[in-house]
Image 1 (cartoon, helix red, strand yellow):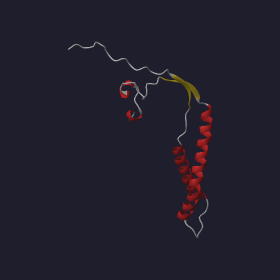
Image 2 (image 1 turned 60 degrees about the vertical axis):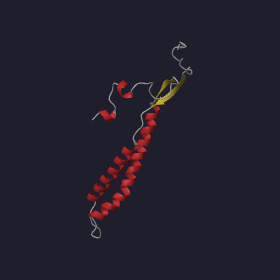
Image 3 (image 1 turned 120 degrees about the horizontal axis):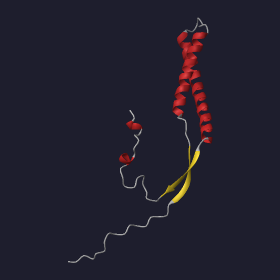
Image 4 (image 1 turned 120 degrees about the vertical axis):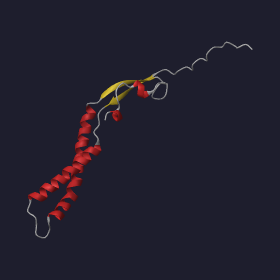
Length: 126
């Protein structure tokens, strides 16, 4: 039997690359600001409870708990406001980068992403 000798199959035509722009900026992690604000509220409640004289009707514990119930949410709100102001100022410092999509689809064109990346990722930095 003879082969037709057509050779390898031709590759499908790729669409023309698309170009665009992307805005890249840093953003604060809101959860960390919330936790720091809550900690600041507890610390403020402790300082206020220790600074002022304690009533005979109430002890140190109940006074601290009541102040904590008010100051922890206040600290969290303050931490969120700080994060929003920081986010607003960082958004002005963002820069615009040009991108090009080659239309190949997927994140990687056939290689192993772990072997192509010379820098260790966050999981590798322990």
